[in-house]
Picture 1 (cartoon, rainbow, N blue to C red):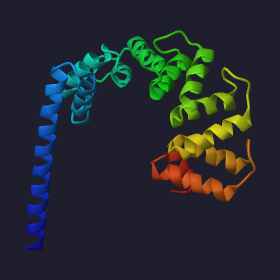
Picture 2 (cartoon, rainbow, N blue to C red; picture 1 turned 45 degrees about the vertical axis):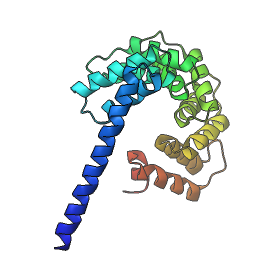
Picture 3 (tube, rainbow, N blue to C red; picture 1 turned 90 degrees about the vertical axis):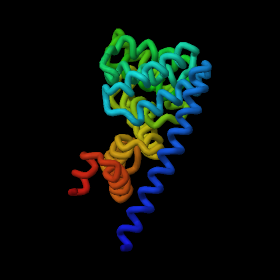
Length: 226
């Protein structure tokens, strides 16, 4: 009897939330169709979050992202870059991804700056340019983006586009780790474990490995013997 009651309550909650989502989507659709760029972007997110990859909803998401992006909406421009980079909605095109990331990056979107930096570093869709990649990673990192901090740290650690500097690399890995990036947490743990760019502290290293492992990082799990 108790299990049946719980199941009924759960079903009611699902129906309530479904009705609320439908009403919210209907209002967002109304605003989007009137030309509101924020609503167009939000509608794209709604479609994307509820869509299996390359479904019809993916195409709807891309349509609304494009409508907002063409109005200069930076998050929509970033989303268009993501759609082309990942191939969601069926078309993978790194050159188009770079174009949209650049539009958003130039408006100050920290994630787009990091994403553009990755394409420049790897020479995907654009000519490889380590110096330009560093500049975009730095802009992203300066805004506190953990991914930008991670990639700038990796550049300093590897001496890629900048002189090798283990202290700067470790500091950037720390910032990325504190921002919740699992790779940053693992990398900072490695620096602490080995005493690279910072004082050796194996106990602190284990704590960062645990944080990374909790996010599913396989290298961190291996370090912990999981």
